Length: 422
Ligand code: AMP
Ligand code: GLY
Image 1 (tube, protein in one colour):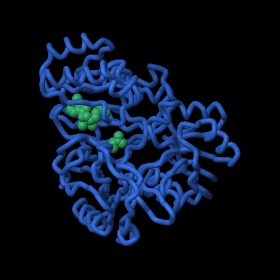
Image 2 (image 1 turned 90 degrees about the horizontal axis):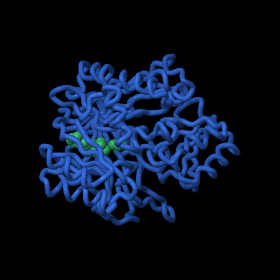
Image 3 (image 1 turned 180 degrees about the horizontal axis):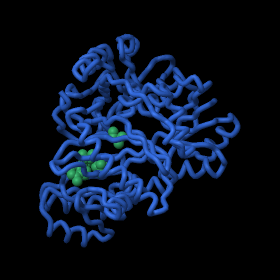
Image 4 (image 1 turned 135 degrees about the horizontal axis):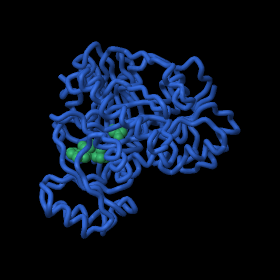
C-alpha cells in the first residue's frame, strides 16, 4: 500500500521512518517533508493548507492511508476534506480538533465530564478578565483561546503581568483571532508528562508515557519552545499507580464525554498532564502526535504502526495489542542559535552519518533542507537525536555521544535531557 504523511517536522520524519518499515507499505509520500524524509520517502511540494491539491494527489496516486502530523492542518479541516472525498485519513475532524484548537472548548469539556484540571474562568471581554484577576491569587496562567504556536500561554506572577498579558492578547491581538477569548486559570505545581492514546471513537489504547522539556535552557530556564528533548518511559514520575489514575481519571471520563456529547474523535489524543500532589490534572488536550515525543515513542514501538493507525480509523482498536521495547529512549533536540526567537538558516550540517552509525541511534530531521547537494539548517528545531539504551542512563549517554558528532554553526541544545528521570 501507499501512505501519505502530512507535515515537515521531526515528528513527521519519525512517522515516515516507522511507516516505511512496515512490510505492508510499498511507498511513502510526505508533503512537504524535509531533507530527512526525502531519504526514505518521496517529498511532495504541496503546502499543507492546499487540501484540494492533497486530495487530488491521494486520489490519483491511490493512497491507502493519509496520516496528519500538525495541529493547524487538523484545525483547518483537512480530515473532513479527505473524508468527503472518500479517502482514508488518520486524525480527528475539524469539529473534534477543537479540543486542541480552542482552550475554552477544551476546558468546558473537561469540566462537563469531570476530568481533573486547574480551576479557571474564561472571558470574551477584557474588562471582565481584568476584574477576575483582581479577585484571584497569583501566579495566574493566562491563555489565548486558539492555536498560537505554543506561545499563547503566559504565567503571570503579579497584577502588572496579568494586566499586560490580557492587554497583549485581547487588545493588541498579538495572537490574532486566538485573542477573542482568554482562559485564566490557577497555577499548578508539579512535573508534566505527555500521554499518547490512540482513540477510535469507542476504544482507546495508551502508549507508554513520555516527558518533554519545554524551556530552551537547562534546568527549565528561559522561554518555552516547541520542546527541546524527551525521554520515555518517565518511570519515576509516571509510576504504574499514576498510569492507572490517568486511565481512570482522564481517559475513561474522556471516552464517556465523547459519547455524551456525540463527538466523533478518531486519531491520536495527547493529553498534557501535570502530575500534582493531588494526582493527575489536565493542562491541555493535543489532538496529534507530540513533537519530539514521537521521536522517543516510535523507536520503542515493536509492532507495525500501519496496523495501529488503520485500526484507529476503522474503529477496531480493541483487536490490536502493540508490543513495546522495554528499553529507554532519549531524544535531544539540536536547534538553531537564537531559537525560539529569531535565528539564521542555511548553515551546513555535518556528522549525521557518524552519529547515526552508533548502536541504537536514529537522527530525525526537523528544519533541514538540501541546497545544491549540501545539507543545511532550515528551521528553529533542526534535528532530534534519539538513542535507545538498556536504561535511561545508558540511553542518555548514547544520545549525547551522538550529539557530539554533529556540527553546524550556532547549534544549541540542552545538556540535561533525561536528568529528571535519573
Ligand atoms: P498549554 O498549551 O495549555 O499546555 O500550556 C503550555 C505550557 O504552559 C504547559 O506545558 C505548562 O508548562 C504551562 N502551563 C499551562 N497551564 C498551566 C497551569 N495551570 N499551571 C502551571 N503551568 C501551566
Ligand atoms: N512537545 C509538545 C507538543 O508536541 O505539543
